[in-house]
Image 1: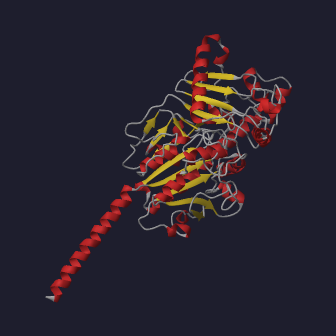
Image 2 (image 1 turned 180 degrees about the vertical axis):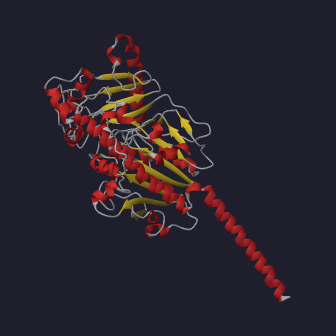
Image 3 (image 1 turned 120 degrees about the vertical axis):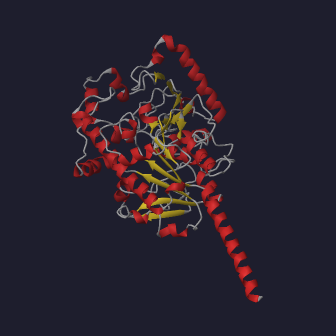
Amino acid sequence: MLVRLLNIGMILLLGLNISCASKEKLTQKSKPNILILFLDDLDPDFGCYGNTLVKTPNIDKLASEGMLFTRAYSAATVCSPSHTTLFTGCYASTIGAPHHRSSYIDKLPEGYTILTELMDNAGYFTVNFRSNGDIMYQKLYGATAKTDLNFDRGKSENNRESGKEVFKNLQTIDPENIDSYFKGGKWDLKGSNQPFFAYANIETGKKHGFVPGRKWAKERGIAVDSTKINIPPHYADTGEVREVLALSLDAVSHVDFEVGKFLRALDNSGYADNTLVILMSDHGATLQRHKQSLWTSGTHIPMIMKWPNNIKSSEKNEELASIIDIAPTCLKAVGIEIPRTMEGLDLLSEKPKKRNYIFATRDGMDGTFDCSRAVISKEYQYIHHFFPELSFRGNGYAKRTLTFKSMLNLYKKDSLNELQRIYFEPEKKYPFELYNLNNDIDETVNLALKSAYKSQVIKYQNVLYQWQKETGDKVLKARELLNVKKVPEGTKVDNLLKLTNE
């Protein structure tokens, strides 16, 4: 009798364990993992986007297994405000932190929150990746742990380009051993059935990766032939321009190599089938007229998502998409209610909301004041310069890192055409710009100068003004504060803010 009771007890206990195991398995299945691969300073220059000079087999494969967005845009033109939009699901101007690495806010406004906090509260293992080795090694291989937010930065803790670390865990990886990516180290703190929210910021394609990218590509026999590059109309065809563009494309191929490590490591870990992978960049390449610019060369970004059994293979999404959509998309995917303060949309909704416009901002760069806004639709892009008296390259980074010296010399000799001269002029020249994105992909003809498009200019101005009113986007009254007709080049953002408080 005792044996029979023990057997019954064992059966009940076994059944309970099976039931619990099934429940845990169901919980794990119902809570997908998320891996964000955030690429610094990259245009959509991959094979899957039509570039035939680069070698990007890993990213191309990712696109073939998921969804490629053809009209995805950055919400800001430089790192910190763009990263801020990724993690908050809001435009940087909405939360009052639009200036790049200047005038940080101590905390988010009441009612606003950050993606990592919401994921952590939902029981997710939140983790950022950082490569071992010296600074340059981290920037060229693996991941940098960069978050670079414009709020609540605090003291530098785990990475050199952020401040307060917003992830609970920092996984140190060895780029020469992908087995270190999703196991060992801090990863072992993850519960066996705990889903993860992981983030890897990859800087391999930035300007500091151009020369190493060329060396890497040459070693593999895949270096881009500079004579085969089609020079965009806003560039002069000089030896320097061709060489730098070739270097930048070799760096793109190198980025793909690093991305491939994460994707293979994910496959090897067994997590891939239950992981939403999101790959994108923060804004345009580290090139003149790309980074720091509101033209589509600076705001059009790659965006690819793969989620087995949830996203069909080789899908193309031609709707307007923005970085501000990533946070809401992640939250919806894992079953977390999207805060009403988030301005982005769920890009994977079964009944997606189609928008007519998205917006992008350009404000102070490296502490130097400026303010422009862009409105983008499927047909047009409108750019509004609130201070056209300021030049496009009015900050040190633009002069030092983005400018082609050969073009600057040609400008000084008055040897550039009108389109090529714009970037070098002491003022922006045109307060308004309007381009047809379907007929003029390189944005060579400013339709705002044509009387036939006056009604379109007014329409987009009204769209911009209404958006600014609704989101609380405040433009500093710099001329009034300084009591000048034209704001001087090099005016500091923080000095203006001090004047507003006096």
